Each structure stands twice: as C-alpha cells, then as structure tokens.
Amino acid sequence: MSKKMLIIEDDVVSRELLRLVFEYDGFHCIEADNGAVGLAMLESQNFDVVILDNAMPVITGTDFLAHLQNNPITTDVPIIMVTGMLNPQIREKATKLGAYAIVGKPYDLGELRALVNQLSARIPLHPQESSLLPK
Image (tube, rainbow, N blue to C red):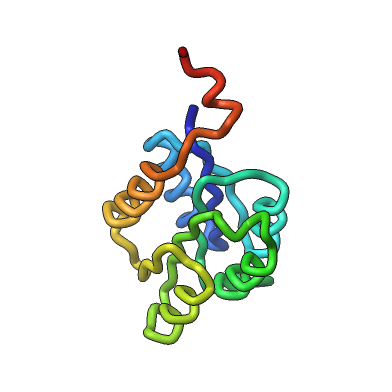
C-alpha cells in the first residue's frame, strides 16, 4: 500500500539518491530524466507527489508547472520543486504556478523528507488499495 512518487531530475546521481531515500520511506518511485518524459508519465499514471528539478533540458520545472495548470487531470498533484538557482523570482513564479514547496539545492534531505511526509499524511490511499483494507 505504498504511495507513488514521480522524481523528475536530469542529474542521475541526484535522481537515484532521491529514489533510494524515498523507497526506504515506503514510496514506489518512478524516475524521469527530463520534464517532457515526466509530463508524459504524469498524464498517463497517478502519482501522489512529484519532486521536480527546475533546471532541466527539454522542459524546465517552471514550464512543467505551467503545463499542469492547463490540464485538469494533473492540477491537484502536489509538486515539490528543487532548484540550484533559488531566487525570489523563481520562488514567486513556481508558487503562482502551483508548486507546493520550493527547496534550494543543495537540499537538506531531512527537510525534503519532512515536506513529503507532510504531504503524504494528507493523501488518501488509492481506491484500489483501500478495498484491500480489512473492514
């Protein structure tokens, strides 16, 4: 009954580290190496939370967020953006585009885990999972 996370990060080492940490925390993690791949995955599968890098090839994190606003299927998915270029303009833009949180790189894994756990506590089980619970 794990929750499902999409990790969109072009840096292989960062992506694998996030996957290992959150799989340890009980998430089923799917990885995407750029925003376009991540967008296609998000439009075809359900995810409980997304960790999104901002500076990526093909589609940046802020462009990714803008795409989500135009798609009613994906507007409610909580997004945590991570960025190495955190400044007031990026923070304001990402917030206006619906990011749940923006975390600067290098990020504190404890802070990132706390944000995900905070989100996870608010996320109900998937309908197919709740039917497996004893009544």
